Structures are given as structure tokens and as C-alpha cells.
Image (cartoon, rainbow, N blue to C red; front, side):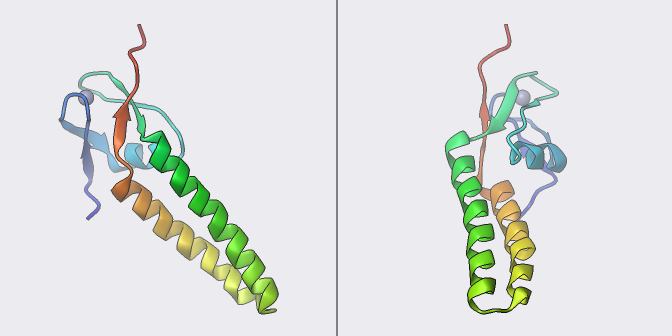
Length: 100
Ligand SMILES: [Zn+2]
């Protein structure tokens, strides 16, 4: 399930909001409000999902061309949304090195 709050991997408190967690899926760096540690989505897994996004666009673009049916292009935002949800659910947060 998608929770409204996510646990910080450093201080273990449920301090990360859904919006912040989602922004890490867009390669953004967030800061935990409790321990002020910088957090990011695990880069290796996030890279995998980025590859799936590219595959999604390439596959359905080619498929709609092959089938001569542009309705297949509607699958792109659907799969995109599914990949976003999977990123939220399965890509864990990781701590970055301290600022100072
Ligand atoms: Zn924290």
C-alpha cells in the first residue's frame, strides 16, 4: 500500500510525506525535518525504473506505428502512472553524506 508518510532511513521516524517521497522518484534530494539528513531514492533501483520509463515510451510508440492504431499511445500515460506507483512503493530512500 501507499502510505502517507515514509520512514527516514537515518532517524527511522515517519517524517517523509508522500509528496516528498514522490519527488525523490524524479531524482530530487530531500531533507528529513527531524535529523536534517539529506535523502534520495536508491540510485541503482531508480535507474532501473528510469529505464522502464524509456522502454514504455519507445515500446508503445513503435507498437502503435506497427499496428497503425494511435490508440496504443494512450497506454503510455497508463503505464507511466503504474511505474510511478511502483517507484513510490519499491524504491527505498537512501541517506547521502553530510553537508558539512
Ligand atoms: Zn531523519
